[in-house]
Structure formats: C-alpha cells, structure tokens
Image (cartoon, rainbow, N blue to C red; front, side, top):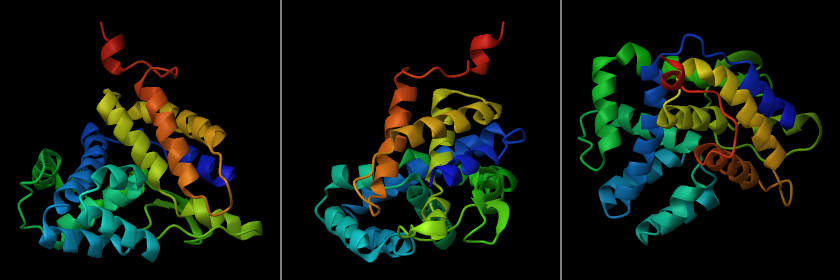
Length: 241
C-alpha cells in the first residue's frame, strides 16, 4: 500500500497550478460538507445528496450516513467523510443541479461564482489532471486523474494496490490545507510528498478491512500541520520583503 500512496504524492507536479485552482479544491470540499449539513434538515436536498453519494459509498456505509443525516447527527457524519467524497458530492451536485441556488452555505456560493468567472481553471477535467494520481492497476495507465469509484476492498498479493489506487483523498486534502494555510501552489511540490510520508508512518490498521485507518492517519497529519507541530516551508508572504 505504501508505495502506491507515495507514488501518488510524488508523480504529480504543481508548478503550473494557479491559486484559483488551489482555492477551488478547498471550496469543493467545504461545499460538500455544507451540503451534508444542510441535508440534515432538508428532505428533498437529502434525497439528492444520498443519491449522489450512492456512487461513492458502500451500501452499508451509505445507509449509516443517511440514517445519521435523518437524525441530524452531523457530528458523526463529517469526520467519516473522505475529502474525495465531499469533493465529488459538490462537483456532481453542481453538474446535476446547476440552477439550484446554494443558499445553504457561503463556500458553495463562492464556488458557483468562481465557476462562472473562471470555468477554464476550475472545471473537473483540469482539476482531475492537476490533483489526481496515477492508477496503473485500475486504469491501466499512469495518467493523472481522479477516479469516481467506491473504495476498493482489501486484497492480498499484487491486487493489494487497488485499495490505495482507489483512494484519491490525500492530494485533495493537502491542497485544502495549503489553501487555508496561505501557501502558494508551488509549495505543494514540497508539502505533498512530506505530508504523505508522515501519514504513511501514522497508519495503524486493526485488520485488512480497516480502510478508515488511512483517513485517521491523514487527519492526524493535517492536525499536526495546522497546529504547527510539523516543519513546513515558509509561506510566500513570510519571505517577501
């Protein structure tokens, strides 16, 4: 598993990524979270959200999410959602319901405006290429892209690569942290490999099916960065005279 996760952090390069792209990655994830929060008290919206997530979540987990949303247990839903899931939720919701106003959250409203003003920079195809990872086992090529698939079950042997290949969340999450922390996109070339290495060191799974262990390790690494427990590269604003 570790080699595939590290390859997904090293092969993509971010020399040509714009600040708008980086901000869009963060907005898509925050917008997905806003949709989940709003759907807890809006039945029609919840139906749309669950329908979209059915493409991403295992049936058992989807039922748990829907039950928690109906009971307004948002505090149990959000920590278990992968960044790739909230990213896809917002992107697919926007694609399916482009005319629906996003009056449930400021991030979604900002995302809609960003897409109207700069569609060439924040569309799915470009973001998928710039923030995606290689999938040699699943896609049979080393092209960089975000795959819209459910997490793969754990396998043994050579098929074990399918689980990390189906897990596109780390690069999206690191990009969100960089945007919220005020880092320039070019610094992702340093941040992403280092954060991924630290995340891999933190993974402690109880069994082969414990894929949430990856999510726990990723969020712990993000918390370390946010709280200053990691040595991070200086922000551009800190080195400018």
